[in-house]
Amino acid sequence: MPDTIVRIDPWNPDRELIARAAVTLSEGGLVAFPTETVYGLGGNGLDPEAARRIYRAKGRPSENPLILHVASPAEADSLADITPNAEKLIEHFWPGPLTIVLHSKAIVPLTVRGGLETVAIRMPAHPVALALIEKAGFPIAAPSANRSGRPSPTDAKSVFEDLGGSVDLILDGGATRYGVESTVIDVTGNDVVLLRPGGMSVEDLISVVGSVSSPDGEHVLKRSPGTRFRHYAPGIPLLTWREGEEIRFAGDEHGKKRRVISYMGMRRFPEETLRSIYFEDPENYARGLFSAMRELERSGAEVIIAEWPEVEGVGRAIQDRLRRASGGH
Ligand code: TXA
Ligand code: MG
Image (cartoon, rainbow, N blue to C red; front, side, top):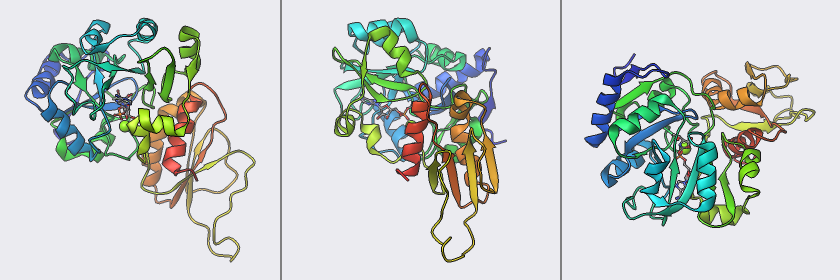
């Protein structure tokens, strides 16, 4: 195993290792760490130079802002103007897979915010992440620890695969629990606006704030820069499939050999495949989604067929990721 990857007990993180990681961060280095959603690529959230290193390591456009990770709700107070809706949501759902977008205070570097007046903040529910933020003493800026456009990493191996040389330390706390990223919502105003479906279900949010609006396409583009970019794409084409739909490839008519296909989903797939990955339920589908994409792209198949899950809750996040990974096909 490469020596940038170091095992850490996810429930009872080793104090010395956390201290070492915190020093790396305070010296301007980058540390990848597990959260309950996906692995993050962390840097000092108050240091513009660290933010620039993050964008460079990911190959990410610098106008796509980073999330600041905090270890307590009080820490969020020092970074942004907390609205009444934000306060309610924080009380109910932090720590957890919910990122809130608020008006930023001046202390947050513009580089971290991608030049915006707002800042995204989240308190993760993972002992390693929380211990690291606490020890560092500053908020940690952390996008998902993948190369820009690739599936998010849900284990340390995937982080290394994408970012190996450009990260100083990878804390390996095993596979992540949710598998999809946090839900991102804009709570700057009176209405709560969904910017990215994720680990926290919209139904749960509604139970606390009454209603959540999903802006139309153009609105999302303006408010959430991340949605502008192609995302989550494996190295081979991904197509979505609903049960009952017939699979036909260009070439079938001419009697040509079928392309070699792979499949992931919850239902039995009617075609022969090179490799299939089945999930028991939507939660497991979400958890395994990104690692399945990575595994299937390595399987030798030419295409991935992914079941389109017709379910609410975490199903929305799966649909969103599949829509982007497939480019709509
Ligand atoms: O679960 C997660 O959220 C993971 C873990 C590591 O915490 N992080 C993550 O970060 O997914 P990232 O950078 O891959 O996605 C953050 C999303 C992007 O779509 C970005 O455009 C959006 O949040 N975002 C960040 N700051 C924003 C802001 N001020 N206004 C609107 N959207 C923002
Ligand atoms: Mg990402």
